[in-house]
Amino acid sequence: MKRFGLVMLAVALCVVAARPAMAQGVRYGVSAGVLLPMGTYNDGDKMGFVGGVGATYWLAGQPIGIRGDLSYSQTSHDEAVSVAGHTKIMGGMASVVYALNPASAPARILLNAGLGFYNVKIDATGFPSASESKIGFGGGVAVAFKMGTGGTRLIVGTRYTSVSTSAKLTFLPITVGLTFGK
Image (cartoon, one colour):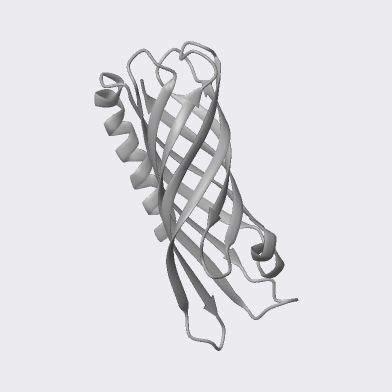
């Protein structure tokens, strides 16, 4: 219930921020989806969830934007190969975004790549928690669909992400979200 309240607060803040954002070339948004562990991360953890907020500043008259994202995700350990527990990842990423279509298109394809900083916490039953904060990088694609005549868009995206922890975590979040603004 606490998470639901936080998600609703994030949505409300995005709606309130949408009007000023429309005048400034900034888009704000929220997203949620599934997190698919890859590589060695996939050996010990199952699919999990991810949620996030972000903002993109579009350069005037250009198909290029600067984006900042904050996200939280959690996966459960696969008890068939490991002990019970969870892996929690919290972090942020700064990215460059390139739009393949004009802003007026009904569906806009977006490419992105960037660097981030993440905290990875592993909780395992019977063991003390372990936590590491490291740099990560990512690259991905999204499609933003216009919703009506306003500035709201439904966005579906994914971004391969690698965090340079001692066990090198790689994962693929697949998210659906709403963006507001210009």
